[in-house]
Image (cartoon, rainbow, N blue to C red; front, side, top):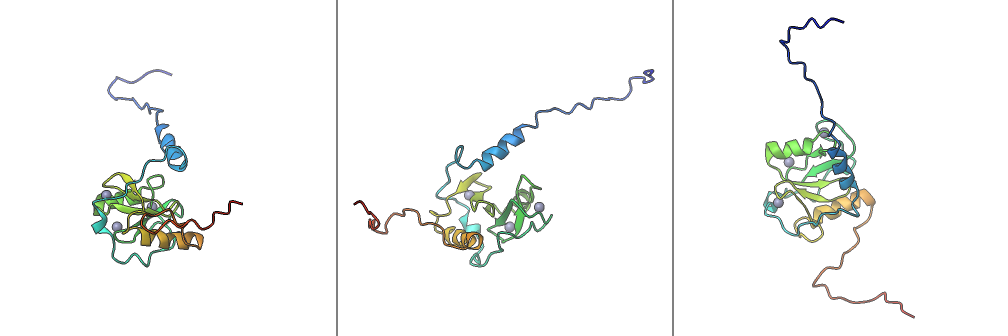
Length: 162
Ligand SMILES: [Zn+2]
Ligand SMILES: [Zn+2]
Ligand SMILES: [Zn+2]
């Protein structure tokens, strides 16, 4: 093979192999036990919540844009169902286009605020609890386990210490 190339073209097509970082992100996302980031108990963007969150799409609703079936998010501002950043990033795009920053994950029912760049504690934040419970009921067929909430009298009932 003769190099009949008069060094005019730039033939540099070296793709860096450090795309591994994305896999680390993935495992961080799924490993909800360790590496779990603390969820916020307040957020300045709750006024953008839809007022009709008593009726939401079911957790098996596909992405509105690409019809992907898993890893979808529910936009809590307009109730659109869109896929995660690990699929086709449609929820992220939606945030960038519409500035709808609040989303509920249909895979683990966590609530994410894109503007705060943080998870929100849907069981503590009063505005989020109803939609969290609705989604939980649809996904698991029962009410979410009640977490120790302040104010409602700590009656120790089932203490069966013999
Ligand atoms: Zn999608
Ligand atoms: Zn939206
Ligand atoms: Zn926020």
